[in-house]
Length: 557
Image 1: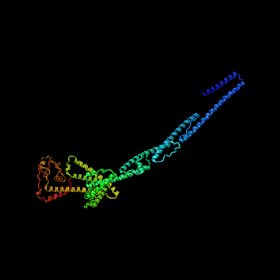
Image 2: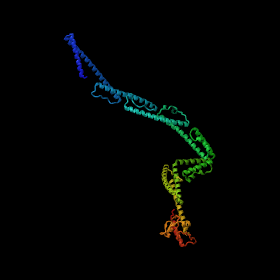
Image 3: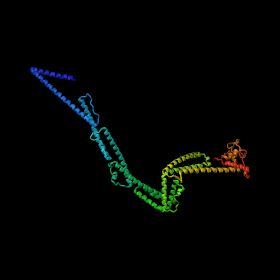
Image 4: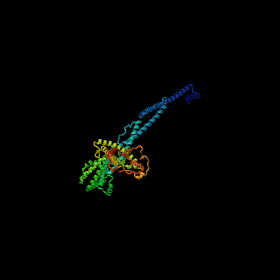
C-alpha cells in the first residue's frame, strides 16, 4: 500500500470517527456548544497522540545516528589497528542501511583482529621454544598491538628459519654424537666432564643446540679423532716396522699368522702387543745383525734403482761396502734406507714417469734390433707390419712422454732450486746421451756391414764368386731367355752387370741365371780358380780402384 493511500485511509478513519461522534452526540442531545467543545477535545487528543508518536520516531532516529557514529568510530579504530583502508559508505544510503553496512564491516575487522592476535600468540610460543633450544634472541615485535600482515609474514618466515636451523643442528648433533661415542669406544675413554656427560648420557632433545655447544662438540670430536689418528699412526708405524723386520729376519708364516689378530685396530691392548712384538724383533735383529744388514742392502739397492742413482751416488754411501757388521752399521743402513725411501715416495710420480720412459726406450731398442734381422722379411703372419706399427706408435709415445717429463722436471727444478738427476745426470742430458749412444751403435753396425761387404767383394774380385744356388736347382728351374733375375740383358753392358751385382743385394730366385762366363743358359759353370796365378799389376790397380769405389757404397737389406 502506498503512502498516499495510507494517509487517505487515516483521514477517512478520522472523518468516520468524528461523524460517529457527532451522531452519538446528536442522539444524546448534547448542545452545539458542547459538541464543539468535545470536538476540540478530540482534536487535542489526536494531536497529542501524533506529537507523541513523532517524538518517539525522532528519538529512534537519534539513537540510530548515535549507533552509526559509534560504528564509524569503532571501524576507524579497527582500520588503524589493522592498517587497513578506511571504509567509505555509499552516497544516498539511509540511516539503517548505513548502520547495517558499518556493523557488518566492523564484524569482519574484529574477526581479522582476533585471528591475527591468535596467530601472533602461536608464533610467539614457537619462537620462544626454538629460541630456548637454539639459545638465540626472540623475534622483536610489539605483542600489545595488532600485527600487520607484513609483520606476521616476517614472523612466520623467522620461525620457519629457526625450525630449519634446529633440524640442521639436531642432525649435526646426532651425527657428531655418534662419532664421539665411537671414538670414545675405540680410545676406551669414558666421559669425565659435565659437557661430555651431557653429550653422551643425556637425552638428545634436552641438549642445548647453541652455536657454542655445537662448536664445543666439534672441538671434542676433533680432539678425540686426533687422539685416534695418533694411535692409528703409531700402530701403523709399529705394524710397518714389524712387517719390515719380519721380511728382514725371514720370520716364518706360522708366527706371522699367529700375530695377525693384532694387525688391525688401535686400542690400548693392541698397541701394547705391537710394542712388545717390535721389541722382540729388535732383539732378534741384533742377534742376526749380518743377515739383517744384507737384507737392508738389498732393499737399499732396490730403492737406488727406483731413484736412478748413479754409481757415484751409490758409492757415496761408504757403509754399504763395510764388512764389519755392528749395531752402528745397522743404524746407518736404516737411516739411509729411510732417507732414500722418503725421497722416492716424495717424487714417486716423477720417478714412475721416468721408469715408463726407460721401459719404452728399451722396447724401442729391441724393435730396432729386430729390424736388423734378415729373417723378419720371411714372415707369413703379418708380424712385420705389426712391428712397424708398434715401432711408429712407440716413437710417438716416446716423444710425447719426453716432452711431458721435460716440462714437469723443469717445474720441479724451479720449485726446489736443485737439479733432478737420473743416473747422475740431468734428465735431458741423460736422454740426449741415450740417443747419441743409439746413433753411435747404428753407425758402428753400418760401418761393420760396409767393412764386411768390402772384404767379401775384394775376395770375389780376387778369387771369383761362388754360385749360391745348387747346380741341380739351376739346371731344373724354369728360365726366360735373355733375362737375369728379371733384368733385361739386351741393354746391360758387362760393366753395368758387374756393378749391379756388387752394388746391391741380390735376392736369388729358383730360376736359372746367366753364368758369369757368358755361357749358355741352363749349363753349370765351373768356378775358375784365378788364385792359381797372382793378378797382373795392371789388373791389381784396376781392382783397387773398383774396391775404393765400392767401399763408399751402402748395401741395403
